[in-house]
Each structure stands twice: as structure tokens, then as C-alpha cells.
Image (cartoon, rainbow, N blue to C red; front, top):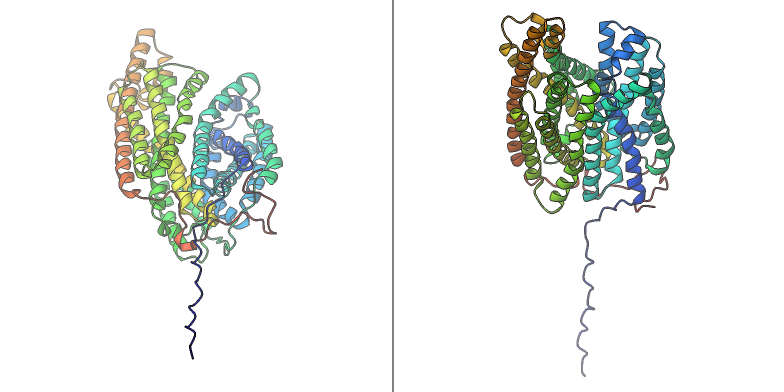
Length: 543
């Protein structure tokens, strides 16, 4: 009897193909939200320099003591620098949009108080609250950029815009101050903050999604005073050394800050829920070098600004407002720098070489400052513009690298660390390069010149005002020549630091990814932003 052949097993379908999830691309709503986020960033950066031309009017109206005048000017930057890490970590825990809105409300209220302050003490207190508000706004804006733009290419473009606005705001603040004081009263430099903050409070809840770390752990309260004690004494000492010299109190202040910095680092390595997780440095290649190299970029920018502003006013003899208006000219080039760098990386050029090229371009800016004599405004402006372009290339690429390496839930802490490094770098640039130039200036001034004239170029100009014409002209000419020689030496040091940084970037960042999941927190794609109660209606695709 015939037997049926055994039936063959039914064919199996091939396993489904899998692919990595594609990040959602930002649409019109996200780009509109970015424009809204640029409002607080612009104002916070402007407030660093907005009192440049308002101080004489404030002195005439409020009659502060010398110490009070210094605090009116500096307390904003001190509080801002001291609280950045705390506020960045706090935003990760309570929600970045919530912290942004609280900061905007505080910034607006403090601006109104400062505008109508009737005493130096009240103005100092208002400026301190402005610093607190600024410390909430800066890391929140950058962390929210990380949340809004999950596509690496779009995020790079957005961060380039963020970097350009940050740099341009510092330059615009001084010019706005001069114009407002010229036509209104000194309080108007604070009132301009109110419309922008009101617009932010209205539009942010509609356009910007809430985001936070879903598992933040307990907030480490001990880290807050440790971070303040680490940052404030160092920033204070570095800011005072260029004008006052390396006196013992400033050196001791820096040393005390470094001791507390060591304690702060130890606390972050041992705490269960630190403000700044050490895993940020261990988890992805490039994060640590990005923070350090970003600090050097800020070092270069502020170190050059120390000389270009004085050169325009004291060497060329321009008024403060004229100098500020001319100083805006280099900012025109900044808008092209970040997009070009982003395009190069997008076309496959290794980010290490783009960053190294940015440092090299910035070094060329210092080279132009080295070539300037006592009557070379266009050379100095060109040098400042070239240097700023290189610094923006570096800053935008390193910020994108650091935020791409950090997980979305730690974006606030990563942002605050980058911005704290920028504050340190700026203070260090003014201290180191300012001290180099001051040493050369004092060494080249004639031995018979008055002591005040041998201290600073401004002192020499003040002394010359009380001398007969031939002696005054000779003293001012010697002071201007000595200052320019000091600028040349500072340019040599600055260019050397930048070229060394270019070499470090070419090696340390080689092969660093544009964006990849952060190993210490898993490899899942960035989650869609959610509020604590659930989805808030935000559409990643746009309208």
C-alpha cells in the first residue's frame, strides 16, 4: 500500500526587519518655541554689560559708596555664576519649563524693582535677584533646546543659534545701555526686560513642553552651599586681579574657592543623588573635553574683550557710546560662523577638525591684534570679529557634542556645567591676559612717570589732563604705546593657548559622535516630552 510522503514543514516567513527609531523632526511649533526661548537668553546675556554706561547716572542719583558701586555692577555676575549648577539640577527635578517660568517672573519683578530703586542697597538686592533669575533661565533655555530638537542635525542648528544669541547679547547690552541713558533715565535699562518676560510667560506654556528627569532622586542640599563656596571666591578673585593686581586677598580668595571645589567634587562622587553626576564624564566620549575646551573658548573671548574695549576708548580716544557702537561691528560676522560649522559636520567632516579649525581661526584673530599699532581701529575690529567667529564655531559644536552625549533627563545639569565653565573661562581670560598686559605696560612706562600713570592707561589719561600740553601729550603717547605692547604680549599668550587647544581638540574629539544614546542611562531613544500629569498636547511634528 503506497504511503504518502511526509509533508514538508510550512515555509516560515523571514524575521521582520528592525531598525533604530528615527528621532522625530521638529516642525514649525518647535522653531517658534526656540524664538521664544531666545528672549530670556538675550536679556540675561545683555544684563552682564547693560550697566556699562548707566553707572555714572546711578552714581549721581543714588550716591553709592565705592564698595556699593562695585557690588551694583558685579553682584549679578557673581550670583549668576554661583547658582548655575544648582538651578540646572533643580530644573531636571521640578521641570525645566516650570523653572523657566519661575525665573522669568523673578527676573521681571527684579527688573521693575531695580528700575525704580531709590537706594544703593535696594538696587544691589534687585541685581542679586536678577542673578538668581538669570541662573534659572540660562540652563533652562539650553536644556529645553535639547528637549525640543531630538533630531541631531536640527539640534545642532538650534544650538548654533543659541550660541550666537548668547555672544551677541553681551555686545548689545552695552550699546542699549548707552542709547537708553542718553534719551531716558538709568532705570530704563531694566524696564526693557519687562515686555520680553511678559511675552515669555504668555507663550511658553503654549509652545514649550514640560520635561524633567522621571527618576531624579532626592535633591542634595549640602551640594548647594558647597557649589557656591567653590564658584564665588574663585570668580571674585579672578575678576579683581586684572584691575587691582594679584594682591594677597584675591589669591587667598581663589585658593579658598579651589579647596571648596575639591570638597564639592568629592561630594558629587559620594552622594546618592548629586547635583552633577560623575557619570556625565564617564558615560560618553567627548563630554569632559567639551566642557574644558568650551571654558578655553570663553577664556579667549573675554580676554580679547578686555583689550578691545580699552583700545577703542583710551588709545583711540572715542567716547564710551562710540566705542560700544564700533564694537558691535565684529558681531556681524558671528551669524555666519555657527551655520558653516554645522554644515561641515553635517557633510561628514569630523567634529574634532571643525573644533580645531575654530580654535585656529580664533588664534588668527589674536594674530591681528598683535599686528595693531596705536592707530589701527580696523585691524583691531577685524581681529575681534575673526576671534569671535572662531569662538562661536567652537562653542556651538562643543555645546552640541556635550548635550548630545548627555541623556535628555540630565540636560539641565549638563547645560549648567557648560555655562559655569564659561563663567570661569571668562573670568580667567580677563585675569590672566589682563595681568600679562598690565605687567608689560608697567615695564615699558617711563620710570619718571607718576605712579597713577604707571598703573593703568586710564590713570595716565587722567594724570595728563592736569599737565601742560607738551608733557600731557608725551605721557599719553607713552601710555598708549605701552598699552599696545601689553596687548601684543597678551595676544601672543592667547594665540598660544588657542593653538594648544586646537591640538587637544583634534586628538581628544576625534571620532566623537554627533549624537548617540548615553550608556549609563540605557539606549532607548529620547522619550516624548511629558508633563507630570501626562501628555500636554505638544505635537513633535509641528503645527
